[in-house]
Image (cartoon, rainbow, N blue to C red; front, side, top):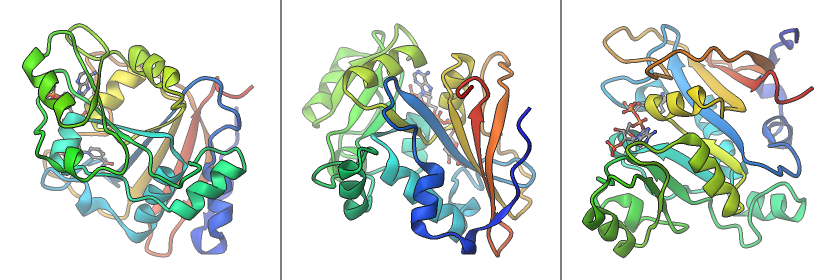
Length: 257
Ligand SMILES: NC(=O)c1ccc[n+]([C@@H]2O[C@H](COP(=O)([O-])OP(=O)(O)OC[C@H]3O[C@@H](n4cnc5c(N)ncnc54)[C@H](OP(=O)(O)O)[C@@H]3O)[C@@H](O)[C@H]2O)c1
């Protein structure tokens, strides 16, 4: 059993320290799926339907860094709609450097594409997903989704990939991302998509921020799925920000020997 690492003050760490602490495994030969969430102390995943009310400067810092490190950002359509997703605005200099060092990134410094998962292909072609793009968006959808909806998204510039009959299956998403060479996967939720990856045994890493507040209300938790899928995780680090934000990173116990 892995001991909980000592807590580290965020202010004691440089940007390069953080890059090292959040780096994906070197030479990922298969997709490595990291999930990133922020919750309140009482476990709320949103405030008034959005995660913005939970964010803190420390969370924003790590949220942005995780995007810099990823090859692709995968998100459920519910989150993309609720949060009005557009392109990821990443640090082009860091992404070029990561590429030179064989740690991901991109030779031109371009951002990772956004991949939206939607059973119904019910996305608005006029939304920021298709108009504010730094890289060609990907849409994972189903065989059951209407063909005209899929065509509208292709016409809007998306690469549309069928990843299941009525629901997209995590394994199909992983396989497709692997084929595209997008192996440093960052899943930004939401809870339904996280639940799909969790029950498929496809979550390698969870970066979880605890926002220093209680929220109450009716907001759900970070993962929901029809059935439970207990998955042992090992702590990798615990960072403390001056405002009380706690940043944690956990890896699936079987991922490393
Ligand atoms: N605190 C955080 O860090 C954080 C992070 C993310 C989201 N959130 C919050 O979570 C809430 C959204 O929750 P949610 O559970 O609705 O989010 P979600 O998982 O992003 O969205 C659910 C929708 O995504 C699509 N989807 C998810 N899994 C699918 C699968 N396996 N196959 C096909 N389609 C799939 C479906 O879209 P279609 O209906 O289009 O078929 C489904 O209706 C928002 O309030 C958001 O702010 C919080």
